[in-house]
Length: 378
Ligand SMILES: Cc1cc2nc3c(=O)[nH]c(=O)nc-3n(C[C@H](O)[C@H](O)[C@H](O)COP(=O)(O)OP(=O)(O)OC[C@H]3O[C@@H](n4cnc5c(N)ncnc54)[C@H](O)[C@@H]3O)c2cc1C
Image 1 (spheres, rainbow, N blue to C red):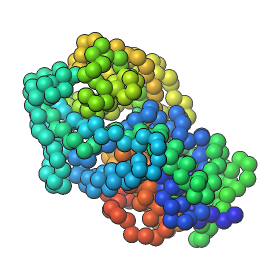
Image 2 (image 1 turned 90 degrees about the vertical axis):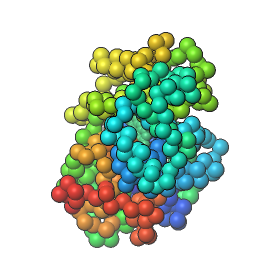
Image 3 (image 1 turned 120 degrees about the vertical axis):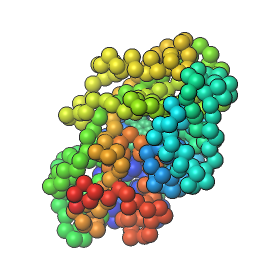
């Protein structure tokens, strides 16, 4: 069988691209070294935030809004939960550059954004106990994505459309010509016309088979769930998703959904991984428990008690912007990687864009900022 597109790495981005490709009638093979969704990549832990006003740069806003529309479309196609509109509060000390960019990007794109003082935040959501001097920006239309559900639903729909999955499969070699790609697996080979590499933290293991090493650093990250005595203040109906940023640190978190507890993670920092396959368990470093506990007790409630923690991986680029481009200047090989801990919210829009890149259709949203050439790569 000659596939139209072979996808190596069927996680957040790859599975979404697989779904959109099959929706437009393409014959697709999805190869993954695990069995997605799973806990060995970057999409587990149940939930991810989607924000529209974007502190990382206003250039992300059109992609965020397009992705939001596509998530809502997916939500309508399934019984599984995909999006929960909790709103998202970005807060921190006044004058912070990230928060200023949130506000500017909202202005530029006419997004609804409420500016709130610490007192107003503490009154509106009694779960917060913010210092005076903090400022908050609340966007009511954003919220929480169920990341594992989304990958599962994309997989189901892609398979219904005829996609074939090669799970727990290891790529040994890749041979390319102008119009054909052969991917050699441990047991057999897969042939196609085009190739998408979207292998998250394993991307360089795949691209090196083509002689390319991209500027990617897999980083070990942790996140934790907390039990709070005043459950009523923190559940999904009464507490928003949130992000905190100051000069030294960035944290993010979620309301308690279905009684799971309040989820909190630290976005900056983490331990770079020498071997992306080796991930030390939660608790291996003292800061795993200490950092989020101290944050929760300072900004939320002294009663916060750690329930559970997990490890996950970010795959960072030097500028923390994504890499989405043709590889080696070849029109039949596309790479999507380096999502630097903030990519999931865009997985719907990026998957759709990747499908369009691979079928030669015009993109709905520009991906110019994500070219690999900014790192002197082809
Ligand atoms: C703790 C945590 C919190 C986050 N919070 C947010 C958030 O709130 N909002 C947000 O937008 N983003 C968030 N992110 C980031 C987001 O989850 C990632 O950017 C996104 O999941 C990356 O998608 P991906 O497809 O590159 O990786 P993945 O989803 O991991 O997919 C990569 C796939 O490639 C497979 N693979 C790896 N190596 C190979 C190989 N050699 N051969 C074949 N297959 C291979 C893997 O098995 C995997 O299935 C968070 C990430 C983490 C870890």
